[in-house]
Amino acid sequence: MEKKPHFVRREFLPREVPPISLALLLAVVLLLNALLYLYLNKFYSSLGRAETDPGLCPFGHFKFGALKNCSPWLSCEAINREVRKLKCVGEGAVKKVFLSEWKEKKVVLSQLTNSELKEDFLHGLKMLKALQSKHVVRLLGYCEQQFTILTEYHPLGSLRGLNETLHIPKYKGMNTWHRRLMLAIDYVGVIRYLHSSPLGTLVMCDSNDLDKVLSQYLLTSDFHVLVNDLDALPLVNRSAGRLVKCGHRELRGEFVAPEQRWPYGEDVPFEDDLMPPYDEKTDIWKIPDVSNFFLGHVEGSDIVRLHLFDIHAACKKKDPAERPTAQEVLDTYRKVLTLLIREAAMPGTREML
Image (tube, rainbow, N blue to C red; front, top):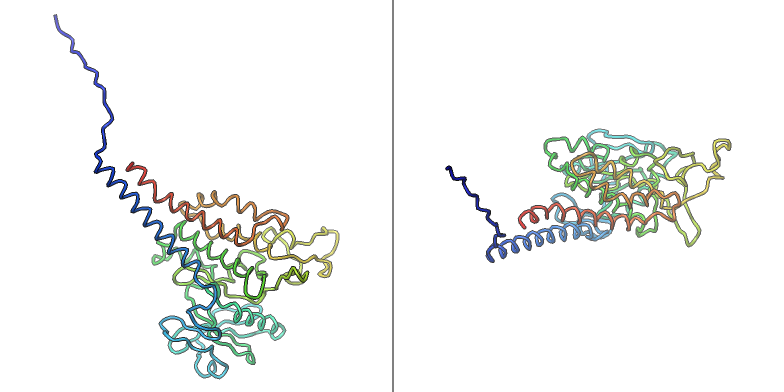
């Protein structure tokens, strides 16, 4: 009679991990956290560097590129003698912009084109002089008599070309949720700086649609955001009861804040004198739409949007008083970046555990 094979049931006990392996794993975890800490510390140090005194020069001076010493802002005489126009690269309602050359360095020369808007031009110059910081394009010189301003040149141009720039092979490595969120942080940092500037609370009025907003900012070669156009920055002064209005025409569309739209319905014709003024919270309303452009549609951007959902919902509150401050938005953006970087670093660690 044939014997049936007997199967012996074995109990598999959990394998004990040698102490040396645990110690090695712990060391790896600690090293990853240390590297993450150093990275974030470096990142926040760069965010928190001095708001004023770009290039560590005193007021009225500048240095950029390979220049080691600070130079005084160029005068009318120096601009006329040393700056050479190369070509026109842009023209708006107020000024024409020329790519130019100064001491074999590319610079930007802006000149007034409409004499009726000279007050806007001079206001922009006043703001540019007073707000020199890491958030603002660097002023190199000016000539009030000739309505001329000289600024640093940034070859990547305005933020309108961001997506095209990120598809250039040289910059494809920058096209990540992480880098795009850092650009959004830069942008919100500019708004926060304007709302707490040395001059007081300033409102970014040249922002009636997304394209207009993007045209006001430059993308630097090291992928930071600078505000470039400061012609329309009215001052809010609550203690004096002073609010602002962005222009004298009716504003329409969902991009502008509700308080910027005509409140009396279609049956009542628009009259500037009847339009109520408003404050800097109009800038907060627009942050989610601008940030949505920054984030784009790369891998991971939807996860970022999910984490920013609550702060963006708060930015879109109909009552301006219920919207967060720019500082609160900036703090939230930074926390989300820290959280997502940590989460991106930890999955490999959890697998090892």
